[in-house]
Length: 250
Ligand code: PGA
Image (cartoon, rainbow, N blue to C red; front, side, top):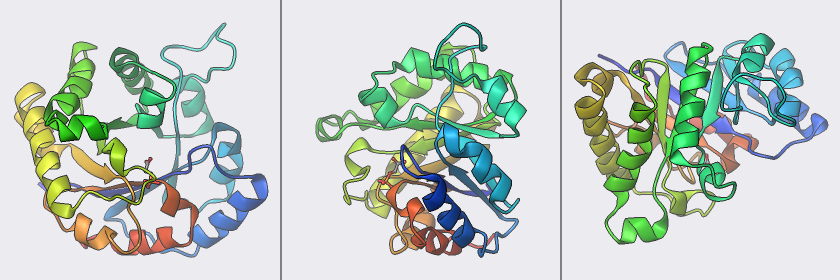
C-alpha cells in the first residue's frame, strides 16, 4: 500500500503579518501534486490570515494545543477551537516543547488523544537527544515516546503522522544521513506494527525532520521508510518549494 508523501513546514515562533504574506505569495506559485500532502504551521496568531490567503492545496496546522477541552485555562488554545477555525492538523510533542517547555511523554500523549477525539490529524514528533544516540538509546527513546500514546488509549493511528526528529539534527545543519534516518524509520515502523497493529505499521506515515533542505530532500525522500519531512528553517524560505518539488512521484 502506497503511503502519501507528506511535507510539513514548521514555522515555529517566527513570522510577522508582512513576512508571512510574502511567504504565502511564494507558496501560492507552487503546483501541489495530489500525491503529496503539504501542510504549513504558522504561530497561532497568524493562522487566520495564512488560512485565508494560502492556496487550498496547502493545509494549515497549529504547532500545539491544550491537553483537553477549552475552558478556564488562561492562555491555552483547545483542539476544538482549531477545528472551529477550519484546521485539520496539529503538531504535538515537538522536541522544543518536550525539552525546553518540559512537556512530558504522558502530557503529549494526552494531547494527542484529545486532538484526535476532536477530529484533528496529529503530527506526532519523537526523537532522541545527542547523548541518547551516542549511548545507543535511540530505539528505546522512540519506543518510550510512542508507548505513552498507546498507554493513553489511542488505538486508531490512521490520523497520526509520526515525525522522527533527532534532536541533534534540528536547526543544527547536522542532518541524519539517509541511511541513519532509514534505519531508525524502519525500527519505528516495526515498533508500530508490533505494538499497535501490523496494518498501522504498514500505513502510518513516518516523516523525517532535522535540517532538511532543498539539497538533501531528494536523497532522504528516496528511502523506502521515509514518507516525507517536517521542515523548520528551510520552510521559511523560497527553498521550501524545492523541497516540495523533490517529493518522489507516486
Ligand atoms: P530544522 O527544524 O529543519 O530547522 O532543523 C525541524 C523541526 O524542528 O521541525
